[in-house]
Length: 107
Image 1 (cartoon, helix red, strand yellow):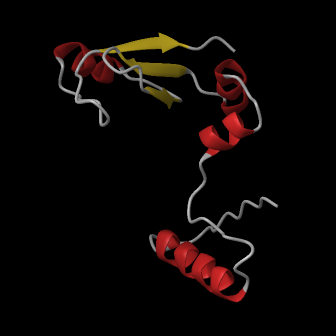
Image 2 (tube, rainbow, N blue to C red):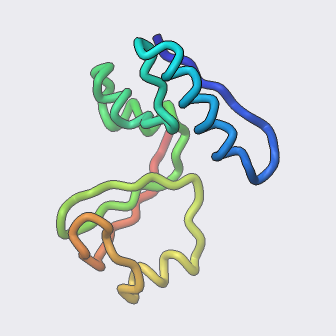
Image 3 (cartoon, rainbow, N blue to C red):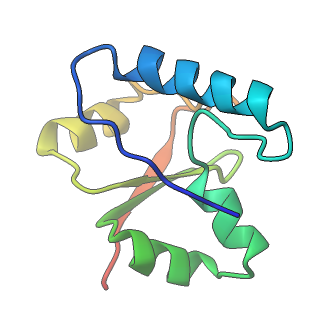
């Protein structure tokens, strides 16, 4: 069973959510509540293609590391961000590469 709960609060959202998740997991171990969602892995488990995932999430841009092919999705990418990618000021968290391809997703 999957459930998504939104907590509208102050800057303590993370602390409050994790404390509720811990309480429920202690009381009901069969639920195994995670403290954050991983939509990408859930989509893969459901047999959803990358294109279907991009469309479902409504992303506008896909950024791909040229070295290891890791992907990130964004709702918006500014001119400043594009220029910083071109200058090599960003690094891939997986492989350390600094060359990326930014493509606009047509939905």
